[in-house]
Length: 73
Image 1 (cartoon, rainbow, N blue to C red):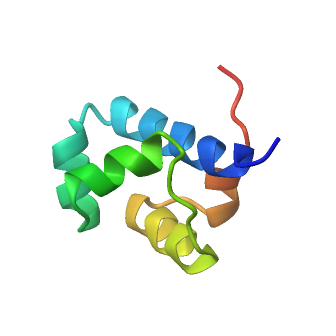
Image 2: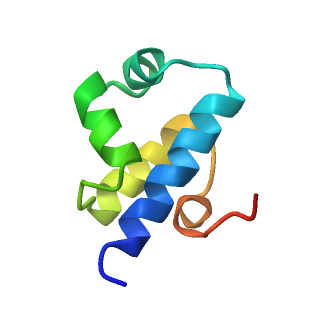
Image 3: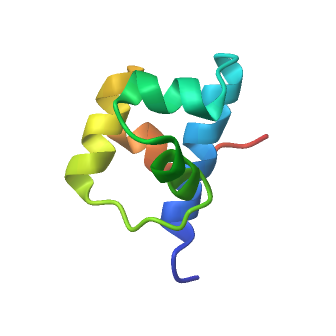
């Protein structure tokens, strides 16, 4: 399905944020991005570059592949 990988990344970031007990705004501040950008990433609306995936993963302390893999709930 087209765009599924970006939705997976968004779900994984949202799960991490919620596990940390952070609001979307606080999480965006922590990552150094705007809240509206973070929202569009979490909704899978952004076509992220590999470099951006690496930066986001590094910022939250996970491997980039962890953001790309679908997690079971």
